[in-house]
Figure 1 (cartoon, one colour):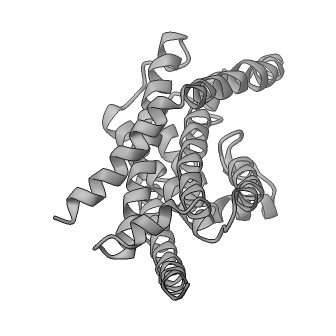
Figure 2 (spheres, helix red, strand yellow):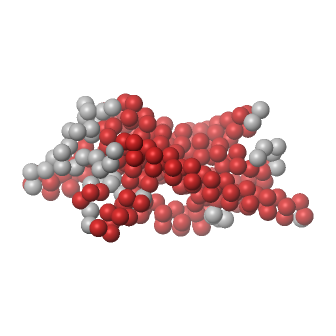
Figure 3 (cartoon, one colour):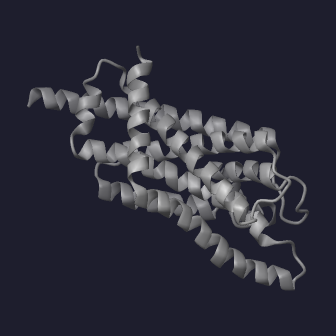
Length: 264
């Protein structure tokens, strides 16, 4: 019986994504802008230096960006539900509060994977995805990276009381997470401090896993930085830790809010 409310929350988020057409369009436009503008600029510089095509190196980071932004936007619904009173209906339902967090994380993961898969097909049509692709590794990269991004978004959401507060925290989190990773440049070639920060960043390992799936050994100078086993271990470990923290905070907040509501 617990699976029915869990699926209801996931289904609600999926329907919301389908109905928000502007959100779907922005999901496709933002990565293409990065490929056309940033990719073309760096590709021109590296071409003069005799380097390999930068577009191919940028694709895993772009797909990671799709999942990062997609998962964060789903987490925004948690703050929306809290601010407009919808969350009170959920916390009064006969199920543990942490199930709400798990349902939101699973829905954010599913939406991020769907968006990344759609973007992969679009990039393949435009010729940005080469023939070195490994489907099993790509699916593994999608699932683990989306789960880590969804868990991170949920941690931000449970600590945000208003939409404005979430927007500020999201911008403070999402851009350092993206730029201080291996999405735009190889981690092993970064200076000492930046390399250390990138290695602490869990998103780095998601992008690296996508590089394993999409690039393989085709790029010698700008390839992968870590092993597949380390990438998966870090992503799953971070997801478990972030989910645990989010469940604790949300359960405490929900219990306090419900008690205040009953008293009023």
